[in-house]
Amino acid sequence: MKAEYKKEPGKKYLVISPESPEKEFAVQMLSENKIPGLLSFEKRIFNGDTGFFYDVSGKHALQDNLEPLLLSGKKISGLLQSLYCVSGSIGSYFLEIQGIILDVEYIFEDEQGMYFCYNPSSEVKEEQVLETFATRLLEIIDHDDDMAVELGYGFYKMVKQGDKAILQILEEILSEGVPVDEIEEKRENRIEVEEDIWMTEEDVEEKCDMWEIFFQKKPDRETLICFVVLLVVSLGYLGYLLCLSQEMSLAGVTGSNSSITAIVFVVLSVLGMTAAFVDIDIKGKR
Image 1: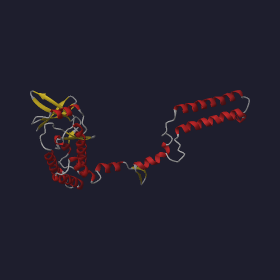
Image 2: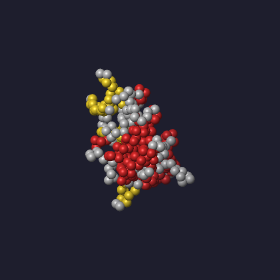
Image 3: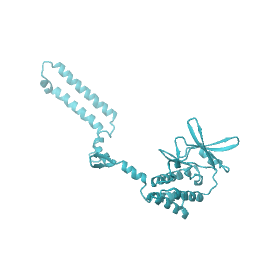
């Protein structure tokens, strides 16, 4: 299988020249769909020669960042997780596992994750593809990394047994221990709130619940308008009484029955608007 890179304005492609006739159905599925975990595919014919164009713009081959070419446990975990995801998604497009090119030279990555090339002209059997890939992994794992050794040899052993499908193998391998990504995520979620005091993100959210209660309920529009109008009318009425009683003291005005009534309505308006925002549960549950 011959491969080369070609650049076009704003684009970079990996171009593979097929060595055998492609499956037209697979070509159509790859060309017309954006399949999660697979590089965008396009078939081109120039001067009678067919080329499979894979868009690798903004991505780099897995092997490019490895010098020497040694995969850490974290990298292998990410690789197997990506393979698990793409193996599960291609079935919805009636594509077969053996079409995925499992070679670090054809596996690309960026900040979002890893991507695989799919060869619609592949004639290799699934068992052979997986065995070749598992064997290659053993050659490039970092043997000083315990996790890399555990994942690499565990995957190789299960593939060689040949009694399980690829999805089942990957699921069992990845579920044996906590993936490194999960460990890193938990570590990043630890937030320092005071010196020598650490809280998890869940702890912080629980502490913030006392503030969220004032904003978690959206007020009923009609009810809120009624209370706002009542507040404006009550304040206006108080101002009107003050204007009519310019010679009276403030205490005298506020002490009158009319003023007391207006003040009561002001207080009720404020309480009503507050109740419109606050979610109150008389059973003590939110």
